[in-house]
Amino acid sequence: MYRLKPEEEKIVARARQIAAEEIQPHAERVDAEGVFPAESIQALGRAGYLGLTVPPAHGGMGQGPRVACAVLEVVATRCASTAMVYLMHLCGLSCYNAAPRKIAPQLAAAAQGKHLTTLAFSEQGSRSHFWAPVSQEVRENGHLTLNAKKSWVTSAGHADGYVVSTRAANARSPLESTLYLVLRDDPGLVVSGPWQALGLRGNASAPMTLQGVRLPPERALSEPQKGMEVMLGIVLPWFQLGSAAISVGLSEAAVEATRGHLTTQRFEHLKSALADLPNLRARLAQMRIETDCARAHLVSVIDAVESPGPSTQLLVLEAKAAAAETAIEVTDLGMRACGGAAFSKHLDLERHFRDARAAAVMAPTSDVIHDFIGRALCGMDLFS
Image 1 (cartoon, rainbow, N blue to C red):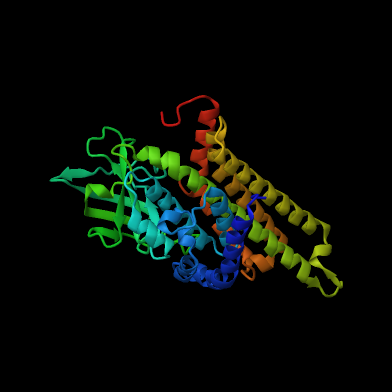
Image 2: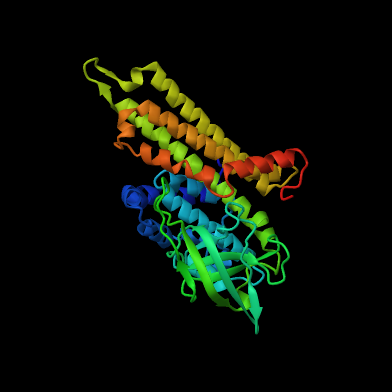
């Protein structure tokens, strides 16, 4: 359905093999213990996938959103926590690639599997309105200092690079922000809380605090006061598409888990399979239809991003919310179809059910997206 070229199909096929052989074996432990999927990320790095979107000039594969979404989907079918870590890495790379001064060392390191990046946008003071930081940089003697309380930083304490947003020094509004690269070893950057969640338990999306972090001006990843343009114009499409791909992957995993359960489990006294019950087959069929519809919608958004038109912005806004609702519905249907076997955690389906709920509350939340879509349809300013 992604309409990939032969060389792109090979990239996705290799990712599918890595997901099955090197990511799936760790997925249950990552979820049960709430630990960061280090082995899975290392496997992706060894195969060059941390450089999937890095330009070939820096040693990467140079791929765009279409291939990235296909890869994210196959990773998510095995471990959604790993897929989310990987998505935030790709979002961070989109900032590196768009930086006024190319972040060449980090791009090359990512291509070699030696640099993991992530976003540090959301703040306690502005909550899910990630585009509006309340922290503000201080400029003094040619250096700048950052102080901020960031919430829900995926890969907190594990990433090598953090794309941090803050109000520009002379900003009069939270919308006048600048983005900077903060490295793991920069003094003053600390993980300031634990990560305990219902789903995506391994993505280490913990709060972080920047306490007097001093940076040289060349660490800027956007022009002064133009951070919002990068966050909404570059990062948001990548995040919306990638999040949708993860939701589609979770839906696909739920379909396969349900199909496997219905076709292999039997009523011994009746000498029949669960699949012999029409109501269970109907639920499986509904899951298949909804998953295929979500994937088709995602691909239509990718088409619009690659060939922009009047409906592109609206479709990008729709992508995450539409796929998130599908994943919630499909995993719920799977839980109902598989009954006690799913409820008692004898199937991976219960993990997919919990992981699927994260997208709806992850900034921009489904409620915020629905408001944006409504405003756009009514011809209203999105940020008034």
